[in-house]
Length: 424
Ligand code: RNT
Ligand code: ZN
Image (cartoon, rainbow, N blue to C red; front, top):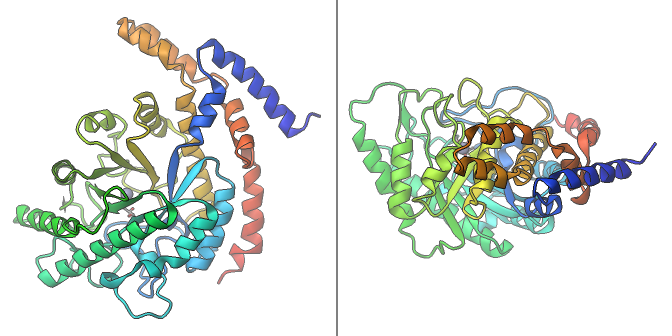
């Protein structure tokens, strides 16, 4: 029997020829794919519990479901899990952190007083792991979320607290960027909203805008290093009727303030796909930020699957030539399966879809469209789906030094037995 490596090379040679015939350079596609950074969200590893003492679990309309054993408890366990996960995922990676992952080590400070030093453990880890860091202020899971409100609260004291938190997180993001030599995305998502019909839907939005303006007024932040973004949402659990930071508000805010807008694939009507929004937004926004997730019936944040929704997003980014203007991050939290495996599956799927877009024989498909021949466009699109993509994917994994096929699963199972299941 041929070795695994020999089989992969055999497949690659076959695929190389077939794709070349269609004008696609397989080696170039693998090279390009390896350069695109995907930001992996730290919060899949511990159900967004974080490292602070507060640690109440997710609130603010988001929810992790399931109780699979072995959840990481604190920074050290999370980083250990991350090390294994990253070794099983090809391509360039960043880690996406949240404010509640500050490691205070006994220091008495609330979220309005966090400092870059509280993230020293993460910065050191990122340096050693060779990954960049992104950041999110945490406007949930905290006693100062008053009646579901943060930056849009009618209570000035509450607003001021959360404004300070936003400022601190931008300082921390700037420290990440300086330490690691690459910009940090600063993503703002606020859960503010009402379960039922508001009597005044304007005032909270006005307050939200004023609070955000107060945060971004800090000119000590270099916006080449800190890439601010605001995330919209349709609804959350217990916030079904009215979300302050709606699509219209956040998009208008981003456009008028010259910052990024975050499209989360779970934050629209369940039948609405975000892929088609990219080219429209990118006519006006210099850059976009994505939270790729998978909603089932609602914004359920299931692990990203290798499905059409994901493929359409990657196709828009790659075939629309937007790789340098769309920053890709993942955002899901499933506690019903091994959390480390969930990272690996979602990240590998994202890489798969990205590579597959890069292997699309786009020239011929585009030519058919330009000729008004939609029959050929559809025929070629459908035939492209069964080109030997998997052979290139295997070769890409081999080249990137990560497990080929499902062989990574054994490593996770072993680790789960040796480490994760021994956690209390
Ligand atoms: C919530 C938003 C937000 C969070 C993370 C944890 O609906 O999608 O991005 O999931 O910040
Ligand atoms: Zn999100």
